[in-house]
Image 1: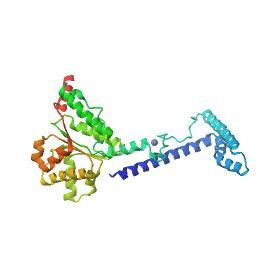
Image 2: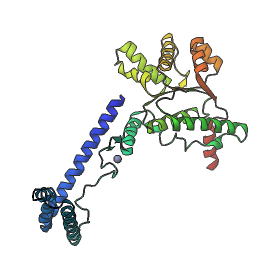
Image 3: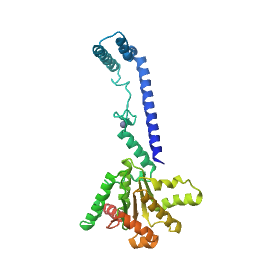
Image 4: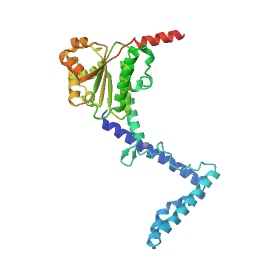
Length: 323
Ligand SMILES: [Zn+2]
């Protein structure tokens, strides 16, 4: 889904939420007007504040004196109102609108700035739609466990990589161009950390696409050979950050190689960053994709070489050890 739709849909959801809250408030008000009839008169008096000010101005009253008097009168009416509600077993604020966010009153905006609650709602919608949504609980920076890397050089390398990607994600902005090539064998934490980057960048309000190489290529094939909607792949060229997992795991054909080349090239021309992870070595990448791709991947992306022993295997051993 494009950027615009997420914002539009979230604004629409906020509008519906505000209307629902307002209608709840009206229902509570109607109810207390029946059970505590004295409140009808008080609320009518409070609603006349504007008229009172206008009337006073017409009669040439002293503005300062008049507003002070009206303020005092309203405060005593509100006090009386709170007492009546309490006396009849209601909370004092029973007829107030109950907002989820007091900062923006569920409007999503504070003056002209988007409120943090709306930024979060857009990010949550993106995350829910993204392949990252289901991974966001487990594959984040907090759950990255350095104890799976042997003490010494191995752990130091893992820590350096962690720190680089953590800072990258935290500092990500619309000008970020740096791409990464995560290299290393299966189960060394490449997917975990690239997922963690994606989740963090989405939470910061950016548009992230996360795909295994095979499912990405399936989408391109659907457009090329089965008349699929071209917008289904445009997002891979245009998103703020593209993460492609497991490069080399796909069925390689001339079509897939040219797809990957176009993707790398187009995103580089648009100055949009991409993260690739792969189990292949540099030589294997060259054999599989040719010089054009390898020179771009190794020339323009910063390589991060993961080391250690398969974490999935270690986890299994740890679990068995506990039994
Ligand atoms: Zn808010």
